[in-house]
Length: 515
Image 1 (cartoon, rainbow, N blue to C red):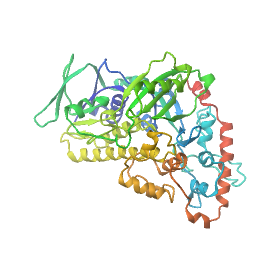
Image 2 (image 1 turned 135 degrees about the horizontal axis):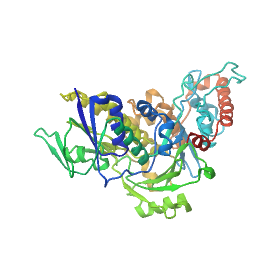
Image 3 (image 1 turned 90 degrees about the horizontal axis):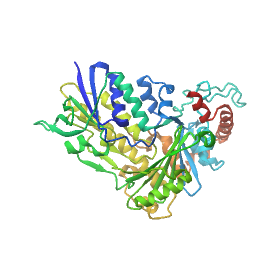
Image 4 (image 1 turned 45 degrees about the vertical axis):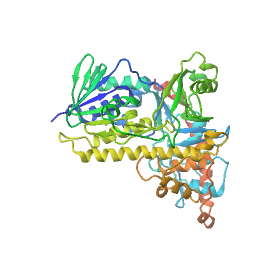
């Protein structure tokens, strides 16, 4: 039995989908990608979440296979600047918190204090980011938390897995170059590329998609259609008229302006993190690629005009922005009521998008693809599979929405209408309850969004401690426990971090060797 899939739209979402389907099903599923010459990939620097490594592993790709071709770099954390106050910054690392006597080290840090930097006191990765370090040694070994000389624990030797630490990095890459790379990958493995414009979408008597009408290749038919047409949502939104649920009431940022800025990595180095710098009406991303910086201002059009946003971005970048062409982007923030309707699945921007803070765009694409494979239909198009898919993908994007709302509600910054209004916007009822709980006890598994959306409780802890706008107090129980082991663990973090930074090459040095 062979099923056929037509994907409308190439770009990152389309070719990630085609590549994954060919890797998953081989010749059992025919895959065709229809993409227009006139519609290109946005092509900004793209940041990812640490789970993206599973995508490349599933395709059988090593980092040396794809990173040089896509100007890829490592991302160990998100660095948030100016969200608490001008000049302040903290890291949200890919690193789970340590536990001392059954209590997270961050809770102990509240009780004991430290340098004033919870991230550097409780985690290793912020030290690596400040040092522009690579997470791998020059021979390719991943850094490990391995310190046999620790005087407090002479036999203390732990790998990342044994230390309950999540995989410590994700990637940055050029989205256009990744789309090109995956095009070659998928076509080599049997996917068919049709470069043409779709001029009509024909429905059958049930309201299902019967075929696409292209300008030069005639009718294109399939059992299942995947809409990767971006914000236009050509199939899901336009042809099938699926309602769209806007998130503008809680996340008002609906515009972006982006620049591609060449850099000399020998002079500048490569910081191994995405930076999100708060501004008057939003925030600016800085994504370091191997050959350039991808940067852009995400802002709310109710508070800022496009010309003003471009001026702010150019001033932020400095002289290097001169003569660089700006790309202005309108964003549709929210999700389709259903991402899978009849015989059509929306993946990527066509189904939903939450602003790129915390780099969830690629994560949501990957999650949708994996769920589509999990619930892939047979000839009967079992509606129960669609319902399960829709529940899973809706929960993921709603969870991301809630996590991002926390950034604005929790930020101490309140110096203009934009930031003051952020504290007044409605939040989901369950989130309002959770915000109250966190004031008495830092977030944990019982008091964070309950469905899978990639962010674990430690991520919420980093935000509540770093943003500074939520009144917090340590759990009273800690006043009755011996703080000695926690003090020693805080000191151990410092020693381990210093040793790790000394042992690792810079990211620029390692990536140059990889090429």
